[in-house]
Image (cartoon, rainbow, N blue to C red; front, side):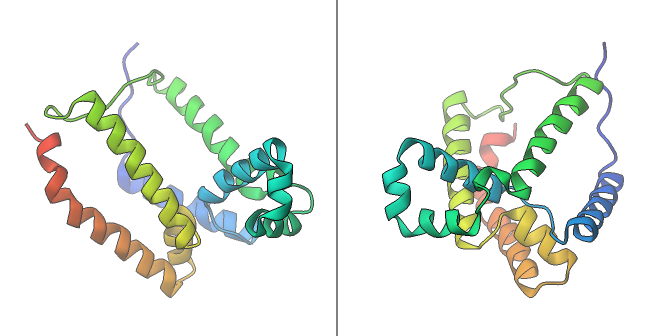
Length: 172
């Protein structure tokens, strides 16, 4: 079975905008992802080291703010839906499988280490900025938040700034 072509990026962006507006209208909140990971981490610490969770200020405040438990947060259910939806999208377009995308001059080790380090830095930055790309930048810009606009400019500015140093790994 042949892979289906990717969706037109302009149409995909337009549809994402409609989904974002619907999310804000229905739930009163925008989209986000890093908060779901934070909920999973807090729940894991609560289960593995409950004494630490009771003493540490961050975990204590987070648990007090989420009286039903960290896993009952809106973002956890959103991310479960994203994973399920992505899987079915991959099945329908015949794109399900494990594949390591890398440039012709990059080794598998460089690609994996780079992805882990980049993901960790982006996750840390999302907590410093009080939201990830989806939550702070995308949802923030949708409601004309100055912070969202600055966040998006910083993300793209940094990407363009470091692209020069990594482009040789991806170009032939």
